[in-house]
Length: 481
Image 1 (cartoon, rainbow, N blue to C red):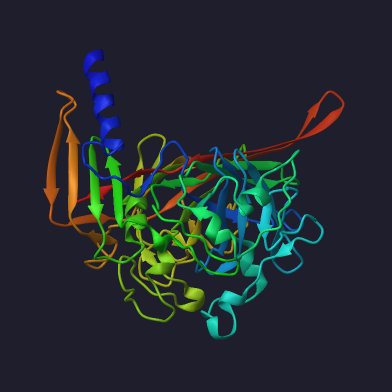
Image 2: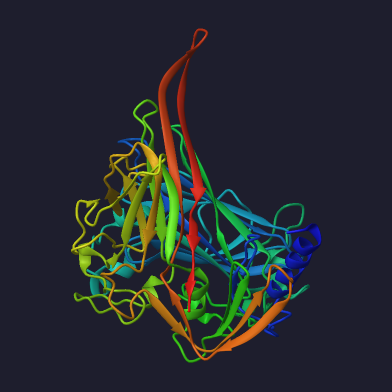
């Protein structure tokens, strides 16, 4: 392709991404540039790598805009996405907020050295952090799985923009830093009156660090832009806003040279968000070398699963997912695992997970899944499935639409779509219409973490710990009909 055609194609695709061709004024999508109204952090953990060597998870969120913002910060445990803590956070313009999720005697908690306003106030002490709670999965809310606070030690995080604060309003004044410090006398009566529709521009990251093990993994949050045209303020202690409040009920998904703009007004409220996260295959690498004592974990998190399943036995989840949540068996969805080494040898073996899941085929059974290789268990997770392999290095494909998946499952059927396809030879856009649109796979986010342990090395007269860790975003495909 010559330079002229390349530039023309890029310009055409940019136009499609901006929705100028389709005429859609607002629709939710994943922003590949990392800024949005909603941030999904795929994993946090404070579990022990080995006894006495816990991880800490360091969170940051940045407001890149010139508008002060009200946002909801929500922590969800990894088995069944039950909320373990949430609060409101107020960011002044260009503000950054940071916090540390740390292990407590029985579970996990959070503290922050940051001055930005939170309601209720989050602890500033690492020795007495604000504790995570198990109220959402004990007593009448019990789901049959572990009800202890230990369950709060791994999961994932949502940050949802509730809206911008009106310049000069009372809440804006309280949230705005003066000489680096805001006053933070936030009124929950006045704040909703001072909140207007947001304009996005949030980005964030999570650092999973284990000081004693010498490992550090930096993970970017997945950003959803165009999530809501309306203000979504909710009081502290209110479970809203959730991902179901996407407005309007329209999604934009681009794959290759084609973009689908889909109407979901007649479907479940969270479907537009699921659609933009749908993938039929996940690919990534692994390393298990003896010399470097390397290990690999994959994080596979499904941030909308909780809106489709209920607690109870049986294989009939309402839509999209296969099974409801059945206590310590989880909520299992069948997958097909295909292994490749670096020399093109391959193995596709049903039943390669160990211990075997409570289904006849390989399955991932939690909402924040840790898929480990040869039980190396990089994160010390209790939400893990193990892939046994004879390869020391290579890559794996995880497919969500195998033969054991019943018809209608691992599929999300939406309404009408406007489809725009760019011809790479002419750089012209062709627009067509679909009466209904099917997205195959599951809504997933995540990454792979690989560690290398070279033990203690000698440098002159000094002994140096030589452990390393690196992480790699998943590679994915989409299947849209």
